[in-house]
Image (cartoon, rainbow, N blue to C red; front, side, top):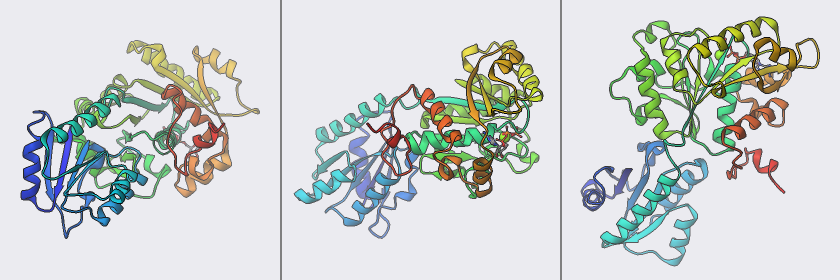
Length: 391
Ligand SMILES: Nc1ncnc2c1ncn2[C@@H]1O[C@H](COP(=O)(O)OP(=O)(O)OP(=O)(O)O)[C@@H](O)[C@H]1O
Ligand SMILES: [Mg+2]
């Protein structure tokens, strides 16, 4: 596990580090001192940290405030252990309320400390970090079918409404536009630059990505083709290896021209959503793509066709579409021009600007199918699932 200790000073943190490092040879432990008596949790990559041990003489109100911010803004935060000289009944309650896993007292009792760490170890292992992670790819047979629009919004539902940790990776090496569907923020770096680094880790991903939401990070595509030069299939392989250790869902937005990098991404995907529209030009392109996928020996169940912008007038019926591409349609998403355009013009997810729209509802259905119908426990004001599953 990745453990961070924050004490008043670095020397005091080192004392706790010596105790913790005797528990397991594989834990990666970092010691930090407070800055002006504050925790400054912003120094830590919370997304990739399993445990934060806060070591202090007396319980600090500022610590409680800092912890409550994390508890309320991130559904997937590290576990916190609070280590102090004493705690009053009220302080204990406050610490529990802000989500602290264990409260321990000085002088540090090795066995108690080991048990607290082991409890967290067991709990996090049962969450299945990495093992449960799914790689989901989106691509359209032909440009403009809606792959990026749907993928970015699905990521938003999985993270914000379902409490999953999601990394979105825009793998278009030219003209990637995924971030514009979610935010006007820009990242510190782009996917090609970090994937090519020999030292890629989750910290590097988190600091390069745009934090769309605390649980939803987006790696932007490079803004010029030169920056993508030298990017290989093994770079993408490595990026996916690192990402699945730290995210529940890794969503890949892929171009429809299949080169070595894209094929590697497709190989590594658990599910590939091919997005099409009920129009002949799109269907021809999808048929061609499905043919390539069968030559690549992809399991038919891994490839799902998503029929976007379905309408009652002027387009082919589902039966005709299925007949044309010789494959079942897994999901149909209705055409909703007004809500889609409004969301795109605002640069926000449609799930946020029009949470009750037919598109948002259809995407929730996809999210549920990916999570195996697991009813989300997230209790936040943005979650529509809360209402959907209310008895
Ligand atoms: N169900 C829908 N109803 C109405 N409009 C939609 C729907 N889905 C997508 N759109 C619109 O289609 C536009 C193009 O979508 P998008 O950029 O996602 O296509 P794409 O498949 O990613 O294209 P490219 O291959 O060029 O990356 C979006 O701007 C969005 O407004
Ligand atoms: Mg796109």
